[in-house]
Length: 294
Figure 1: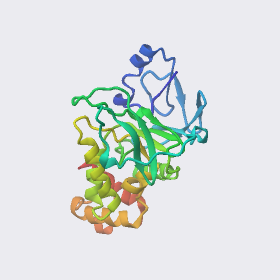
Figure 2: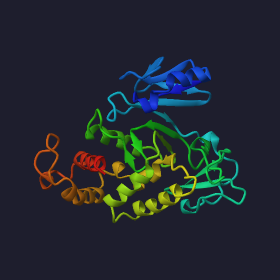
Figure 3: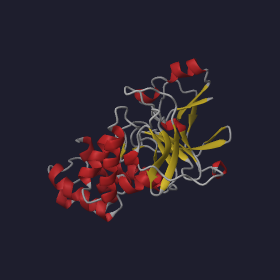
Figure 4: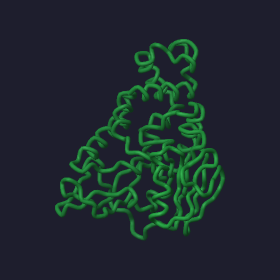
């Protein structure tokens, strides 16, 4: 058994030693570019890790921290179900059945459907809710990216030790993956991110629809997780994956005129009107700084 750590922050690595001891884990993998508590083996770009018949690749994705990595599991076509998929359950209709169980297929966006089978975990309402770890990878949602705090659903991690240029490269790499690839990020920040995205891009129908879905999911007495998400959905609704799109750049510029009126001294020269809004690095930086203040 292995333990993967994407970066050094305490809320991701602080329990490594105790967790490994409790489960008898002898190998704790962490990035070579920074110190991770309890790490026994370091990994870097291009390393491959085999777990059973699953083969992970290590991606170096600096920005949130200098040494941050992600673990990518390519699509596994041999996991295709023998039966055709059942119709998707619209996210806005997800809930619990009369028996108090949640069990069904979940709309992941971009025409993709994921299978969720709930494990008995009782919430305040007595309902059982799905665990993200129970999502079945099949034809519709094959492959996975475990990306820590690089990217969140409809958001990205703060640029603590990196630059907007680095984040743009990370975003481009993630966006290049097949729509079906599931994104397992480090935090359930989707509701706040969805509200920010809807404010940022009020004319984007996909973003506005997603906000309604997320508010419904998180509004249950026992909130339904929104993680994992999928690459296809994030391409449609995550502005940090669309910094190269003219519509997103235009929306960011409009909001920046009000929200960043004082400019970004030390990061960009001049005022908002002087910035090169055809440069996706400028768009990425402006988005992140507005999200920082959100």
